[in-house]
Structures are given as structure tokens and as C-alpha cells.
Image 1 (cartoon, rainbow, N blue to C red):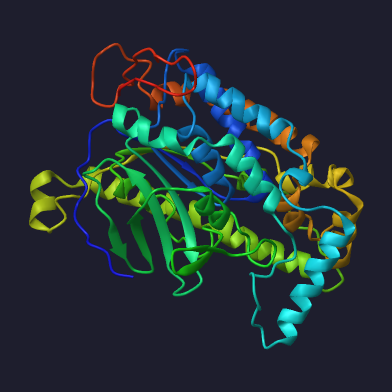
Image 2 (cartoon, helix red, strand yellow):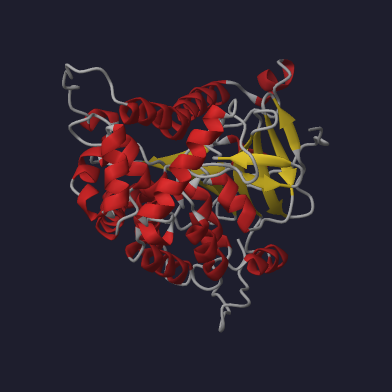
Length: 416
């Protein structure tokens, strides 16, 4: 894939929201955003002109960008969706459906690994498509961009054709596509297919066809999850992760038996969904330290005059999500529980981490929303500082607030 690459102008004070992947773990993001909505003035339309989502995070991203009204109202509606979400709303849970897909996967392996007809996967997530079609207002994205409320929104997916991480974005006319090593940015009109592709966890959910290629979960091969927001013009980023805070981790208990399939898959998922965001934040911190030490003249002399510090705030779960998930496995339908037991996706089998990505149960999702809200409120002062709410001067980056003029979820007018 070849794209034209030019620099996108950066507007001072442009905040990017980065929502990483993680299946059902993305419910945690809603809780953090609920805290942000309560901390900010209630008449804020959208404090994030740039919204970037990956995997299940892309669903939250479009749920925000694809709705009108005050930010608090949007998050309240999103919270309602997650609080009432059940596995049947995301994938087929009937025994015959799960068994049929498993048989199709088996025949695919026996057929030299090639899938015939539709892409094969263990679970059928067509119910998720119907949910997204009913909830996300894709037309509002164009309206929000035209009004100036939104600068850009992006969804990242992985191309099965060439292994590239493809950031599909929709935004202002002056935003330029980009091409870097193993990652590109492509301008397009976002649809439900982009969301389905970005959240299609390999082997669990089927790949999705977009244009001439098939795409899967965006967290796979996404080595620089913060990069899309910067390419789209953000000069500071708000990152919501779904990994456990390392300082709260307990020493690993020695398991005498060999690792189960689910335990192996869980580590693979964690590598894709968690490790890349943590690594990219470390890189960003080092770049910030370098940018702060160099004067504009030194940057110009070194040919890095565009190097600039990027303010960021990252919030991640304070409690181990794996331990929380173990308490809610029983809420899943029997067919899914049986499938998880066979693969060792249990606390005893060491594969509870893999199970947490599929645990779209009402109890688990509500628990994660509560955890996210609690963690967000604990960092209320950091959030106020990030949005410059503690200063009275009109400095660059201070949140600009104008009331939303919205009546019927059709039009919104606010500026930043």
C-alpha cells in the first residue's frame, strides 16, 4: 500500500484520546471516561478533538464520536450499553453455534490452513454488528468534523495481506495520510466494518473484508499505539490502558503442570493488547526528556526541529483484572464455559487472562466500569492539571468551553 505522506499541522492545545484494545476489558475505559466527564465542567461538548481507538477501544471511540450532546450524556449512554451488555450481544452463545464454528475451524486446519467461503473463527460475532449498527451514528462524525467539534477519529486494524498496522481515519481536510515502517494511515469514511475488523481477535472472531483485503484485530502488529494521535495533530494525549498496574502485581505462583492452551494464548493476547502501549509510553517519556533538554537551535542543528515534548496522562487498572475475571466466569453461558474449560481458560488452568477478553458478562463489565471510575476519581487532580482547569490564565492547551446546542442527537456545535 502506497500513500502520500505530508506533515499534518499541529494545533496547540489539541488533545488526543487513546483507547487501547482488550475485548471485554474495554469496559474499564468507560469508567475512567465517566470520571473525566464528572471532573470537567458539565457543559463540555467533547474534550477530545482527536479520538483514536484500537480493537474494542475503537468501539468506545466511535461511540463517543458518533453521538451528539454533552460529553457527560455521551458517556452516560455508553455506560448504559456496557452495564447491560451480555455475551449474547457480542457473539453467538448457543451450543450448536459454538460447535458448528469449532467444526469449521477444524476443517480449515485440515484443508492446509485455508478457509473456504467466509473467514472461519471459533465464535460468530454478528450480534455485535447489529448492536453497533443500532448505536453508533456514523453520520454524526461528518457533522462533528464540519462543526469543528471533532478534528479526527481513527480505527486501527491489522492487514492480513501484508501484516501492516493500518490506521483508518476520518477527519479535517488538511489531515494527511502517512506511511512508516509496518504502519500506515489511510483516510476513509469509517463504517461498522472498520469496527468489526479492528475488534476481530484472531481465531476467536472472523477477519473482516475492507476494500480488497481482510483485516483483523488492530492491536496485533500495532507497535506504536500513540502514533496515530500524533499524526492526526495531537500535542498532548490521554491514554486509557487495560493492563494491571505492575506495582500491584503479586509474585507469580509456580504451576507444576505444563501451560494450558489458554495460558499460552493469554500471554500472546497480553503481548498484543498491553505490552505495546506500555512500551510506547516509555518511549514517549524518553523523547519528552530529550526534547526538554534541547533548545530550538540545537534541534534545528540536529535536523530534528519538529521534535517536541508531548504532554500525556495515562490511567490503567489499579486492581488485577485477571483476579476480578475469575469471579465472573460462572456468568457465561454453559457452552462458552465448556469451551473455556477445554482450553484451560480457568484460574486453575492458568488461562484466566485469555478468558477475560471474552468475558462480556454484565457483572464483570459493571465491575470494570466501577474500577475505572474509582481509578479516574483517584487521579482527579491529575486530570484537572492535564486539562489546565487549575489555572485561570488563557494559556495554550486550556480547555475551551462553549455550550452544546443539541436537541435531538442530530447536531452539535461547540469549539475548542
